[in-house]
Length: 302
Picture 1: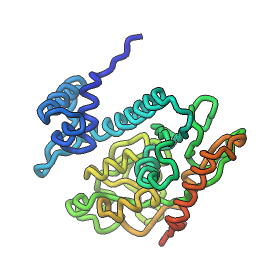
Picture 2 (picture 1 turned 90 degrees about the horizontal axis):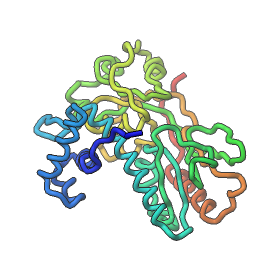
Picture 3 (picture 1 turned 90 degrees about the vertical axis):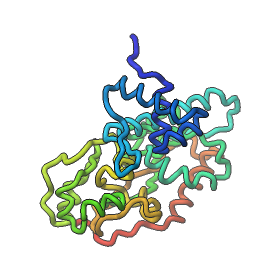
Picture 4 (picture 1 turned 135 degrees about the vertical axis):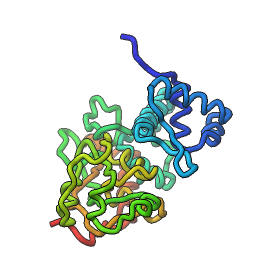
């Protein structure tokens, strides 16, 4: 079988440029000139026959296609990097943690330096819900989606959260969003699974628009990343975006939230729960969760 793959150098240059929204910074990261990065991005656009970047308000922005493609390429390169490090690591002293891109980027990575042995963690991310099949997932610990029972494993609920709309500050101003009804007339980001826009509109007492009214993403993290680029409004989990909202990069829209439920659980094989590194990591994530405080929901959907 011959794989139909784009040039790796072009993908690597595009992914770096998408993260930085700058050819100069991408070039600094990859030790290339900005013009070389630009050339690689153009070659990828020609290969895909679509635009990945555009200029808006004199700023470099991703197109909708570029945003979705960048998120997937970042996830794939993260896995590629993690697998490469694992292959090159001759030491056995490591902990393989499998989780979603959102949990990794918005919760775990910013806190990881507080773990007793951060260099021992080999982080892996999955595009969909992380597999809890320890026979095939090549993981020691899984931050699993929800809290379904797993044969032979210990599943301990870690996070409970509801969802509310978020958008970039400039997007809110440009579209004059002042009431829930205004969301009927803007681009809404959707998840392939667990899309709860209809539930949120019902909680807000507003007739929902005809769905879908925007792009659909494999997971909520890609949708939220698109929102940070000013592409629309997403329905985000409170615990995943709380710090992003506090930083001002995103704006929480309205007090209504969907009914909270367990979004993540700590999962490991029951026979390995007492292993020192697994036990230490479990204590770390639960201590960090408790330090965050329990989520508060001002107005919960009935």
